[in-house]
Image (cartoon, rainbow, N blue to C red; front, side):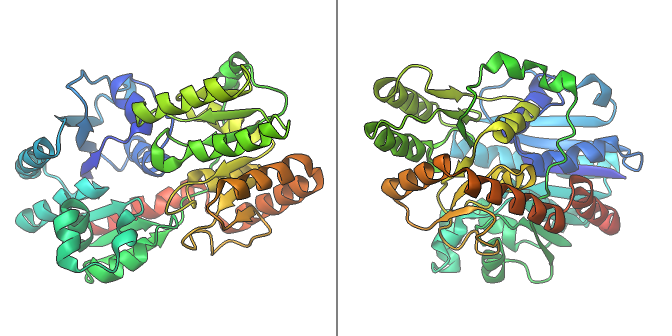
Length: 396
């Protein structure tokens, strides 16, 4: 099988494309399928058209995959440039389909709408993969208004496809699909997997270099304003005023440099040295260990908190404080995580204080969450297999 894969370059997998590394720092939902396609004997070649919001850089693919993958990068720095490059990418896609004997097209994220357009003109089937959707915040708007404001994402939902796979991440992508999605496409609305976390000693050897405190809490997310690391810091500031100084480790790749600088300055001004550590990006094995060794972790994002960190915390048995706004966590029993429903710093501070000092509650959450994950979440292999089998099923 020959696959044409059209995607943004997700920040968590950039090292694969630019540093020749197989360890990733994020976006396992994409990478778990992608790497299995590259390792599959049934896949002859993967042709990747990827959009990268940066100045042009030289690619550096892991040597073992040089003969299995061809990458066509489109660098852009503005929305206008992205639009122009998307037209060029569509033309390139048609050329690749004709010259490389492509069997199926896989479109990822909003830019994956190109797969739908190219499929119409070429007759090659396409499957699109959406990783949640913020359109739920504007779901009452008219279809025309949604298209004008978010044309790429709108088209990613509505253009023809054999199947559309949407992550059930609490952003209610199924509701968006039922409003603007292509009804002829088969919908797969799926949770992400539980992580396997079978890491070698070599992958974990640098953990000691982080000099983690004996007891700490963690916050794992890419550093961006909507991930809201500042809420954790403001809550810890409230507790510090009560002479409750709780060490915290914030880990994530820098997505918004201005926001990163802002929270670093906040830490410098408001906390003793070394109490709060902000680590801008680690390989996934080390991220998991930071999470697993913490007393508990938090997820305080806007819109939804049913992300990979939530599922990984359940799997590892690390208690998590989850902000259940917009009913994003409503499918999960509240005895497996510490649920808060008020979007306020005071409420967050009280939850942190309660869980920090209540060892019995932490033990209870740890046991129940681990059992829930084991019995209700698919393994990485089984979850990836669903998407891979769809590509084989619909290939031409």
